[in-house]
Image 1 (spheres, one colour):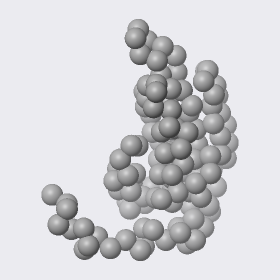
Image 2: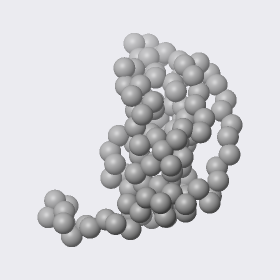
Image 3: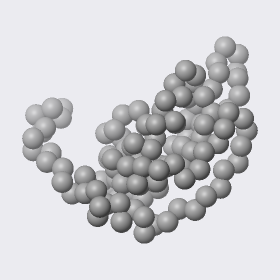
Length: 117
C-alpha cells in the first residue's frame, strides 16, 4: 500500500477492487487516513483496507480500516475499535473515474524505462 507501484500494477492488470489486509502499527495512521484514498484515486480503483486492531505485546495497531473509492473519497471508515463497516461498491464508478482522470491511459513508460531494473 505504501508503494504506488504495487497498486498501479493491479490497476494495469484490470483490478477494480483491491483488498489489502494489513497490520499497520501506530504512529503510521496517515496511511489509512490519507494515503489509501490517494492510491485509490491515482490508480482509479476501489481499495478495501482492512487493518488489524488491538494491542499485542509492545505493538499497537492503527486500526482505521476503510473503503476508498476511485474518485479519492472514503466511502466507509472504521474507528479505533473493533468495527464492522458496510458500504456499496459501484462498478460504474471505476469506469467513470478512469474516463475523468485518465492516468492509466496517459502513462508514458518510455520516459522512465531506464529506471526499471
